Length: 150
Image (cartoon, rainbow, N blue to C red; front, side, top):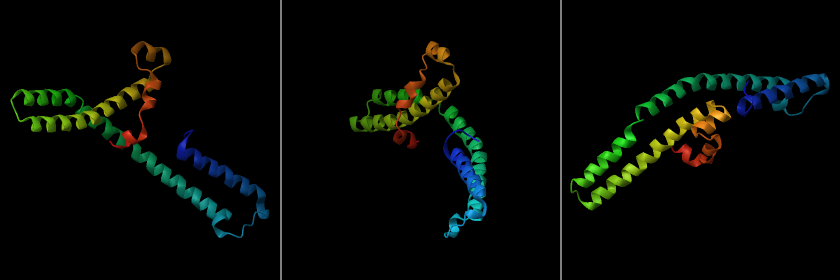
């Protein structure tokens, strides 16, 4: 099991159940929800749910990586299109709208580009990260709220 998150919580719950089993017949709660059989059923349900999530994560990660690869060159193309649109003599309001839309799409593309760099930085050793300029701590500054918008 993993060292953090839900897997760690489930492992700790299993440890709790083993302590309860150690008490034997002395453990006799008045609440049916915390009886040994109910705790063991909850543990089995939690392990099943975690296995389901673990099985679903791999295909999801593959699809996310495929999507990032598909949109990799789009940011430069959007900039060129907006600049060409501005050079065509279009109305200033239309140019401003195009720039605003490009800025929103650029943020999403920039964030997914940062995610790729974050993955690459995590796979490098400290000297390699320094040599390539991919400081691992640089990517910790991205706030969760921004990341959840993707």
